[in-house]
Image (tube, rainbow, N blue to C red):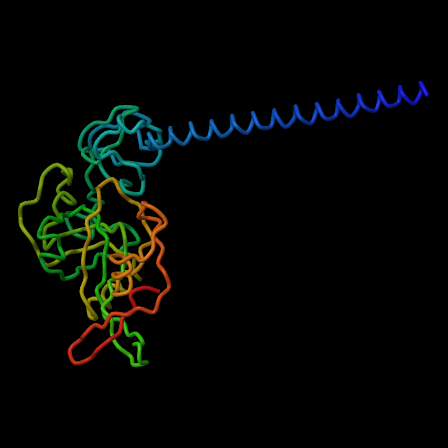
Length: 300
């Protein structure tokens, strides 16, 4: 009897020890998870308050051609980022400095100009390797009322009629705005190549020459073919980009469907506009196009 009692006490002790070990491990795991979550929040807050910019690894004299080996990336708090600071090497490759840049200094567009590229003042001299210079015809509205200048970067939109099947099965043409290309370099406005050939910073002074209907862009060969085709089928619009923004985004085409979905959202999961969802309904709006009547769904 005494032996069985000792065994029972021993087993109870082992069970309690195991339970204590399990509970201790669970507590430590919870503490570790809490510490990791806190560290993630701290890192997320730090990342939200800072950004990566290009800085100089060496002293760069005036007139030097920018090369990748001269630069490196640094994480800088947002309040210390200089105006027109560069974040992408692709944007400034082969550009020339118009003022000295010290070691550790942020690279800004105000100290850079496009290289002559040995072109002897010709448009071919500023056309990037692998690209084609193609001139498109736009009106003053499409060319931003004369405010666009050589050396700027733009997005290209196409306004074309796309054949679609109507509500009654007939083939109709619907006006659609299609985002063609993004982050495209403007080589010339009319015959003006601006700072692209003069060796001065294209961001130093405003161009007061007024609007011009001829805009020359730097496009890849296939892109040049596509934009030439679009010019014969519809209209082209240009959208100005920030000098420091080289991001390419996925943008859906705009037509009657996307228009009504944007201005008449039928359901939202909260105050955040980016989380709007659309309810699948069979509601339509009738649109008159000349003598033809078309039923356009409000949402899908």
